[in-house]
Length: 231
Image (cartoon, rainbow, N blue to C red):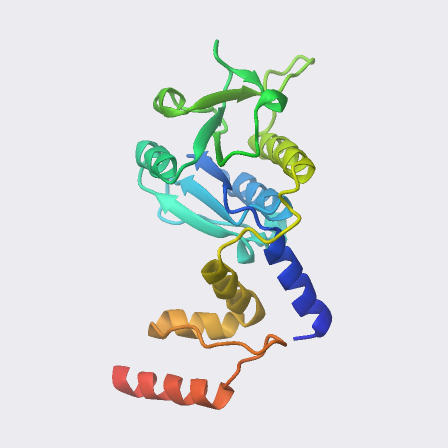
């Protein structure tokens, strides 16, 4: 772990916006999912939510540039459950959806807790999701086509969210919770250690200020003990 790498990790974590997220409703093309996750990382979104048709949410590395390593992915069994869960957590769910009550996305206040809802490539936001959403937002277009690619729409919406939040000073101090900061710092600084802990159901070990394990010998002994217990 070089000092420059550690500084970048700590700086990136300090900018994460825990009250800004994205929810995809059966976006089925993995290249679009990967591009959305990449935008989440770029615009300081720590968690992306998805309702996924298949068994596993897939992020293609050639499209995401490894962003799946920096953004947590939470899956939900259906869109109704996903929206209600986010609303219970205090998010306003804003669907990228054209309707009579839709408004220009630039007129929405993105400094409040916001979950951007993006629909599938072919049919867009479902009727159920549109009915449950708190807001409908549109991106004005002046050409012959009626909508952007879903990943492009995500980037445009998140860019506006970033602009508003920067103006409001929301990037001037760390906003992510201490527990999440420490958890993510270990997962980013020591990904192999994190995987071992997850596999063996061990608590994450403390780190030194330089990002290395505070007690590597003690951690190795604990891993060996747990491995012996599971044989």
